Image 1 (cartoon, each protein chain N blue to C red):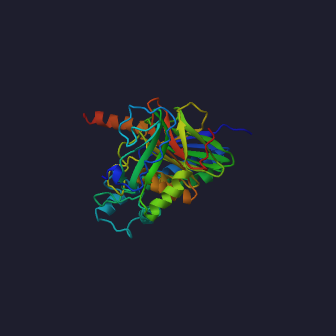
Image 2: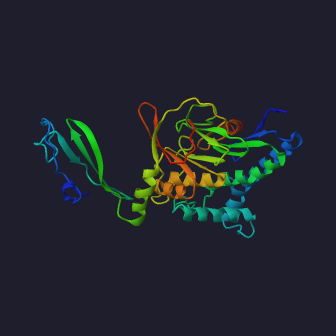
Image 3: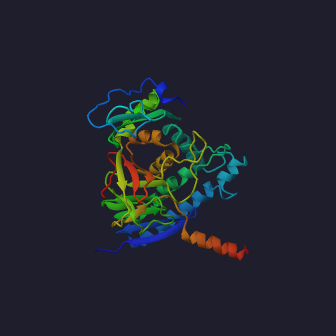
Length: 259
Length: 126
């Protein structure tokens, strides 16, 4: 009856996505994972600014109207504007040069969307590790670590600074900032690289939402934290590092720490 | 930047002469008085308003830190200072090896992608 979890990794957007299915129908698991992967690859073809031939690149060069592009392009660009409003400007996809860069939203959005395909595998429980963001579904809870902000690369198996529980009231966690990509989040108000926090983690029930708010708090600082809390999200920010290697952090009252 | 003595909110009164004064303290208006001394920091202004701290020192030990001025009186700033910030719990965290099923951290590039990129560069003779 007990069957080992099926664990596999697919790559898209130059990032690894780990899928773990428990109690899945073996015949359904493989096509479900393939569909999940294909959805991510498709999102990359739509949104990559690294690729000159993505729909977004074409659109930004004025070669393609939103009406001519897949509806999801409009959906995500509109979501960017929605989050700009909701976060009081903390999340602002407009770069200084005027180019809309929805990258801060795309990964979470794409994973949340692609994950629908995993339901076809009829797994009892499943988890997606999306290059630092985690999404779970099913009945049981899981202990998820919050990475040391100084660890670069895949934090799997490294010492963590906090442990939270996902699978009950919270099913998604996203983390922004830290050591991975230097200077990739800018403060929409000052136009400078954001240096509010070493790392920002947001727990919620929707990966795209948690991801967007984590990015917004990293970019907009303390003012955005209050707005996230009003929406029922829970937040932990790493504010500094001490000489002894410990970290100063702040967490909201309902942050699901089980450390 | 305003000098401390220009700020009306700054209150340097109420020394409590109960112990031997520390002659080494000279930066305070109360330098000649006793053990409990207050020191006002300069008002620092950032995008969210002015901030000024005041510390109380007893026998060389800081016994109190107060925010004399914290933020502007703009509605949003007051709301943030009054609600959001006090709700957060301050913690000191140490990286430890815990039993977890996954780790949430900032996005990272696939090692395989980097490997592939390196191979592509090598292939290109770069």
